[in-house]
Amino acid sequence: MSLSALRRGDLAGARVLQINEDLTEFPDEIFGLADTLEMLDLAGNRLTSLPADFGRLHRLRTFFGSGNRFAVLPPALGNCPSLSQIGCRNAGITQVPGESLPPGLRWLTLTDNAIATLPDALGERRNLQKLLLSGNRLSALPGSLQAADNLELLRISANAFTTWPGCVTSLPRLAWLAMAGNPFNPPPPPRATHRLISWSGLTSEAVLGQGASGIVHRMTWQDEQRAVAVKLFKGRMTSDGAAMDEMAAMLAIGQHPNLTSPLGAVSEHPDGVEGLVMPLLPDGWRPLAGPPSFETCSRDVYDPGMQLDRATALRLVRGIAEATQHLHAKGLIHGDLYAHNILWDGARGAAVLSDLGAAGFYPRGADAAALQRIETRAWGILAEEVAGRCPEGFQALQSLAERCQHPRPQARPLMGDVCAELARL
View (cartoon, rainbow, N blue to C red):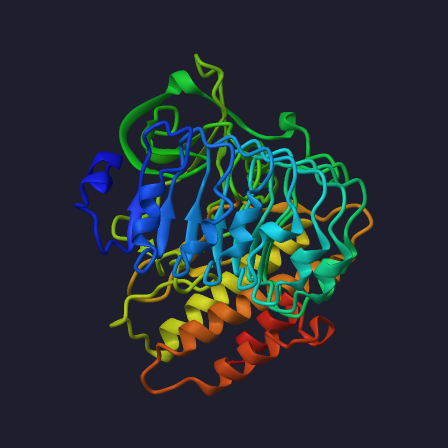
């Protein structure tokens, strides 16, 4: 898509519009799509504001403005009656006026800005499900957020919190929490306690995958004469937090059969890149599901034809429960316990929990059990999704999943109790 095509009228009736042409002013021609436009992506331009009548885009549901130069999150966004998702990463934002938050706000991403305070209006947006604030200057959350009863995912990593905002543990639907890289976090274990694997002893073969925090390579570890997976970190801020906090968490987890436990840390990389060496999973292993879509917001997307027998389902969720309990015993919250972060064999239910990008150590002053019960809810959602893919039904697992999602967090079991009940099943 291009601005010239828009001006020629070639995009009449478009529902989605993306323009990345170093814009410094908002093109008025976009208003010609007011009766159809649902997603507007103006990321990567040089805009400093949006027009006051931006609300004319009355069907707009999603706005992306990352990489622009908004010192202030544009107040005009709040005038859009249908707008539910806003993404403005790394846009130079220092202020978030209450009026910039549309009434139907469901998903707000303000990662990697310079925001020090948030308005009380944030907690008044009752549809709010996902709030991503990593990489800012926040030292407190607005008190109104205690009323955010639908909030399920919260990212506050790499901010300036000196004390733990304990109000978040009482949120009835919170399941995915990232909190690393704040002053309230304890220091990670010293690097010297971990095995160092020289880069010169690793031979690259292929790229296995790439994410926001790094690139995973298939390599040969010459000293051991074995194929391994090596993750090289980009060192950038992600929506989950800082890449180095992910590395610290992974080096602390130790060994567990249901975790992608590292064998050691890369040393002596010629460019000073940090990395981890991990066991290579068997060919054919794949994610259990795809990540949430714009429509599902906080729920993963499964293959609609996926079916599991009870034995496979039980083995799968039990392995992930045991991995989660292991992390909790190490003083860690995974923060992103989702099916799309579970790799499995696609047949018998063998599985590992991966991607510790949102993981964090228990903060000083936090109630460890309360934090663990947030993750109990995440496991409960996973178990419910898995049980729902058993054609013959799995009422015992379904019942456990429901108890793990109890709206009163204190009523949820800890993961040790969950594992004990799964063993009885």
